Amino acid sequence: MSKFNITLGLLFFLFVIPCIMFPAYAIVDPLSVPNNKFGIHIISATPNESSPAAQLVNTNGDWGYLTFLIESKDRNENKWQTFFNDLRRRHLIPIVRLATKPVNEHWEKPYEGEEEAWADFLDKLNWPTKNRYIVIYNEPNHGKEWGNVVDPATYAKVLDKTIDALKEKSPDFFVMNAGFDASAPHQPPNYFDEVSFLSEMDKSVPGIFEKLDGWVSHSYPNPEFAGSPNGIGRGTVRTWFWELQQLRILGVTKNLPVFITETGWKHAEGLVYNPNFPAEDTIANYYRNAFEDAWSAQRIVAVTPFILNYQQFPFDHFSFKKVNSDSFYTSFQTIKDLPKTKGQPIWENLAKLTKGEVYSSVVAGETYTIYLTFENVGQSIWNGSTGDQVRLIPLEGGKELGISEIELPKDKKIEPGQNYTFTIKLKAPKSGSFKVSLNLFEGQKPFNSKPLQFTTQVKAPVILKILTKLKWKDSAAGEYILKTSGAIGESTQKVIINSAGRSEQFEARYLLPDYTFKFSLERPNYKLQTIQQTLKSGENTLNFGELQPDLISNIFNPLELWKLLPFSK
Image 1 (cartoon, rainbow, N blue to C red):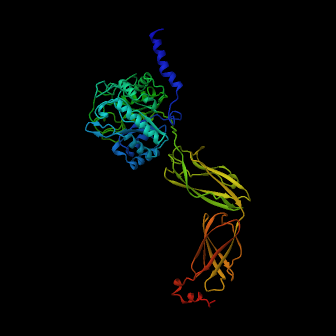
Image 2 (cartoon, rainbow, N blue to C red; image 1 turned 30 degrees about the vertical axis):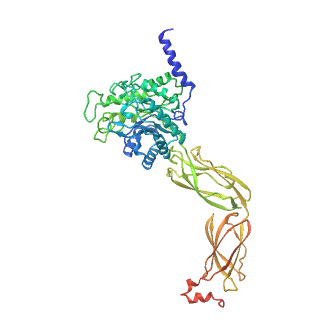
Image 3 (tube, helix red, strand yellow; image 1 turned 120 degrees about the vertical axis):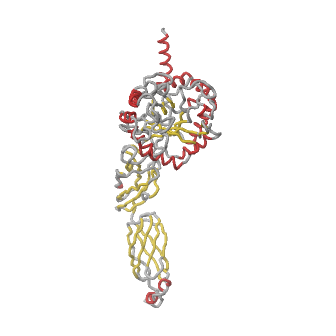
């Protein structure tokens, strides 16, 4: 057998067979749903960056990716939640790269226990998607990125502890390695060859790469960030594939999805024109070529070139936005115009009933208006994440009670933390007991929250009889006002009391059997008397006792005061 055939067979065994045998591992496999791999890397977490980013990555598609870093000194929950809410509205999926803090010309190493601080902070945020993509620091095979001294063993241990801390908080954290500089020379303590770095990591924490959910690659086109988009192997736009080969050689069997969080070409245009770099039109064609070929593999989840907007040295030659201008280089329009997939990431659709109830007992033949207020406690924007309308749908028993499907108006978009009140019409039949289940749906997909379940019994109406007396009076005869408040809201009606202090029985069909209501009885010149009582079907007596004269209110009104005296009529 020729050397060529042996090599080809080995490559097939190392890379093709494992891809078939081992499915991608993640809480949600990002490649199991329609995925828009287009993305961009940004520096500033502001709408000034997210707005053009969304235009770039979502034109001709939807739900592209955005890579950015969060420094340890900037763990501000309100700031980042505001930014995440902005990304949710713009349909951008965040890829968060953790960063320590810069000191002089290098980045500090994480302090002992920092993984817990990161986990606490990141778990407090409401993410736009179920997967919470996290990159653990940056290019640690550069000394300046890791306390000024390359240390693969320590990085592996930090990575291991950070994975555990995040996963303990939530299984939704999708944790990935730092991207490496594949072109770095082996010159410790300043630089470490990537192959050697990976090997030392594996020795320090055996199996560390199997704990990853995805693989981050910095697939830059070297040399000088100006190489051909057709390059193959290490230090090219296909560095990601070379890195997967190195993992296989180390015995890694997991089929890790790939995230190219940094890549891109230096263009000649910048603060100072540099003829050693390709011109902007050439770079635009390079990007088109790379997306159509080198980055077209199904295994690639996201490609976020570096960088959308950088206006000063040393990254002005990477910037998609022109220096001191509101316009962009040709590459921006080229990528914007490329065909993309309409991404459909998974998120938690959750609702919590915060106000209202479906009555457990109703009166036969009566019609009820019921208000149910739900809070959006999930990740999606109702009516805004997919374009499908949100509806409240009876799953069981609703038809017998006349409950029909209710749509959230198309112009209403309910974000996480906001409330919406659905109005239900319920018509009680003549008799029966009904188990009813309601749930919210987005299009044809039910919400992840448990359906709202209840049992309603149809009962005979409530019949009321009023008893009362008037202090200093032998006769209580007259017209009174009965006020009621409770589950049905508030109501008022007139009641006639005879001289013996009794009313005739009357049917109160608006009241709910088995519910507790507050009743107030009013008569001019007497103090209001209030009682609370649980009602039943059939006869109920409301005994208000003796109403007291309101002397103080009438002290300056002799005529009215006279009426309260025992001998007056």
